[in-house]
Image 1 (cartoon, chains in turn yellow, blue):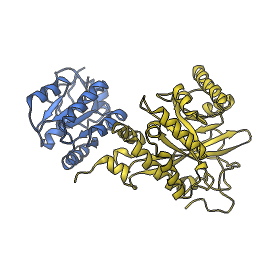
Image 2: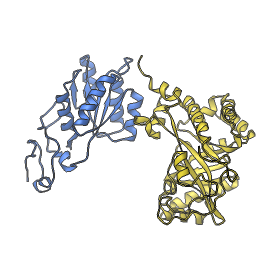
Image 3: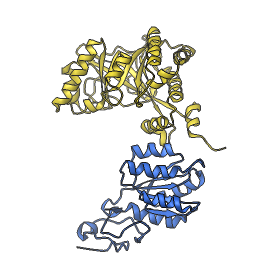
Image 4: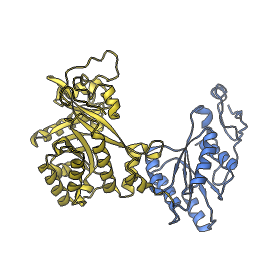
Length: 285
Length: 174
């Protein structure tokens, strides 16, 4: 029988692998890992190894919902390799939340089967389609919040992550897209846009996460503007839990990196970090 | 100054000085093929010596696609394969291909290959297109031609002839 690509991706538990990228809180009081975003990669050696190709394909197949569930199942399993207190971000399409009344129950079952408290999770809402079911979305978001799950809006400023989505989701985190972050130290207009998002976030009692900073200058500028949360390859690329552990990001007593420093750079001196399980607990398996 | 490529290409105008300093990887002489108007062009394999061209093969016949992939890879190209229209569209969105080789009929459901060609043209990509026509319908072939297909092959194509055409198309830039 001919191989069905989509079926393989959605149903084969070994087809998807998980990487985690730390989100750092860089503040004068001390730098720390605030959360880990779970990121999915397709089967190694295939066209879908790259996440952008994988999810482009899935969206064209209109299989976001099935794929989101597979991704959540894969990431929940991988979370077992993280420290017990590490917060985890998961990506979910707005259409999945809008059209699946049983999504919350599915998520709750997944977490419960692995003894993961739902308070550890932040759902990042992504959407590429212009239309989604708003009543269904808000209903599911309310149920998730009641369970302790936090909500983030991904790619703020691009595509459908616009004012309407902000109102519909009322996120706890505004993840500003890299387009507005890259080069912000040299661009007064970008600074104006990010400042406006920060004002909006403050009014809505939310925090801003700057994604994709490419230089120390950009991070310094954003820090001066008041941004504390950063997610960027410059700080740490998406890695397997074992690799994060080897770099010291998952050790209980080891540390996050200083602002704007490459984790691989020579002379990197770890500083105090708050994330992790209780002292002495194994954090990597 | 006009000069002939070391590999024997005679239809190209190539500045002699920079060309002599590099090695041409394309050993096949260029011929005029269906749909290509003779014109002065650069032989980009000479200009970009050492850089493989990215080729996309779209065919739901696994074995045939793999055979083409292996043969073209051995010729020095970087070759991706896609089995479905959506997979091909995703790849075309994220990567830049010098040549796309597509079957007109994908998944035996319809003329998916024609949709690929239309998609490439909608994106205004400069990708060259080779089409496999296993069925030889003249209307379909005419429609594909209207969308700027560069060459047609009847399936199963001779590997050597296909590789030669791919090299020619990949090496030609207006």
